[in-house]
Length: 82
Picture 1 (cartoon, one colour):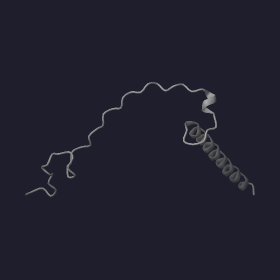
Picture 2 (cartoon, rainbow, N blue to C red):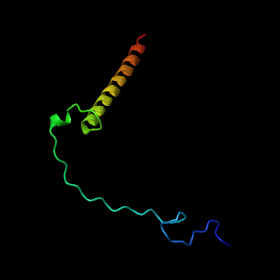
Picture 3 (cartoon, one colour):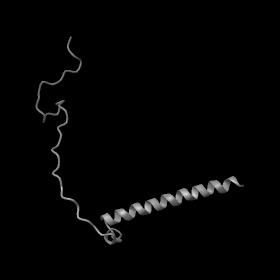
Picture 4 (tube, rainbow, N blue to C red):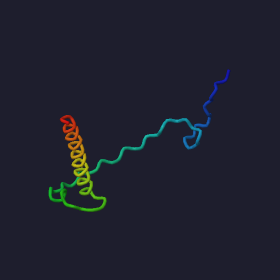
């Protein structure tokens, strides 16, 4: 009896019917240590896709999340006394 799904005999990795495992990519070359940045530079208010904008985005997101949870907690505590 023949198998239900025979494996193609073509061993070329470029063919679409090939069942070879994924070929791993070569490891990237190690980069030099990043240049140290001052606190003033990190806290600068810069617009656009910059590391400073991402830092402020994270800070403001955590502030908004904290405020929202605080409001929910206060509303739940105030509702118990009614």
